[in-house]
Length: 502
Image 1 (cartoon, rainbow, N blue to C red):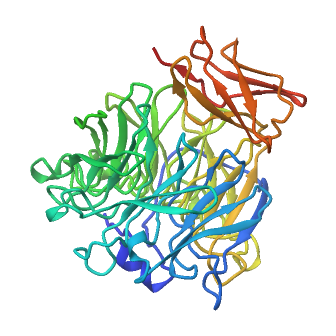
Image 2 (tube, rainbow, N blue to C red):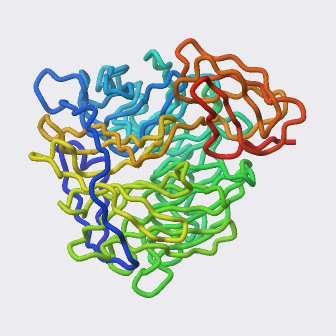
């Protein structure tokens, strides 16, 4: 099997073509294009542009003000990428420009998306930049926070410890655990130069929890690209892009908040790698408490897979891409999945589709796949092409995402929305908490809300000035279940149950 994965050094030359050999299994259903809208085309490759280009690996995040926030890996006034916000209607504002060398302390080329923490600030990572000169060329990377208005603070610069035992080059994003701390991974560095799992406080105190390649032959995995999730059992789950016991094609693991790691599965354990290989993306835990993810390669046709895995490590391959003639069902999914309000999983592929430039797809938890949209369906690929990032379902029910290339301006990428007929809902910014905890509830047109209940128990709440979020307190007597908000326009239910912690 040929493995072709882009490294940081490959990004300086502009657009790249990622070659992936493809094949696959299972029955797919192709449908006509849904309601697709190109909201914005980046123009970062044009002289004098400040937009940036290549919104590369991190999905957009919807903040409590109702806007979306994201990153580009290139362009901007400093040439090393940008942080931006965009309204649901497509008005984009560049909040921050990364630059080099005069601004090397702030990092650069942010691959990952942002996380809005409970304090309202946004947190992210850069795999490059930083003030330590021990990483040749591009730098060692940073963790930063940025206010919704655009004020950036560098919290931590990697390779601050001798031998880079604290890690280097964090490509993935962060997750905030129930204890309030942020968790992430670095692709390099650590005690064995195989990457790390780290914890960092909101003020910037970093603790290295685990160094990959601690086992002979890196059977515990190495080189994690994606971020972590915290599951309902309190543990953190993630993937490594390489390492493992089967020729180094990656792993799925769980790790306790204290740093005890268990390898759950090694990819390419089956003959011909029909179980998938190279999990470039992370995991999502569905409402059935099982985990779902994608692999970039492998599967019955070597076009990548969608898989399901239990917390104990039992893996089921649900779909192998390139099962249709010409790979019209897509191939090479870099990004992970999300579970939408209809219970189905949604994702993207970087290649394949009717035009060979990537797709948006839906897949049931049982493995029936439907291709929803094929990119480069418009003349000149003005709708975008090459999807490295995944999707986010906004509280208006639509999906939003980015393309790495295409668009109206010199192949710099786009931001798009896709409606498949799902209605509005509310989303709790944290999905668990104790009685008395403050919870933010995101939504659309929440002004005039008359009631907020946690599994039927009424809560005290206030609505923000824009009607995009509610601040509520978990009420006494509340139990685990759905959060419901009643507005003059109707009842809105939460997309996932809120867990009331003891």
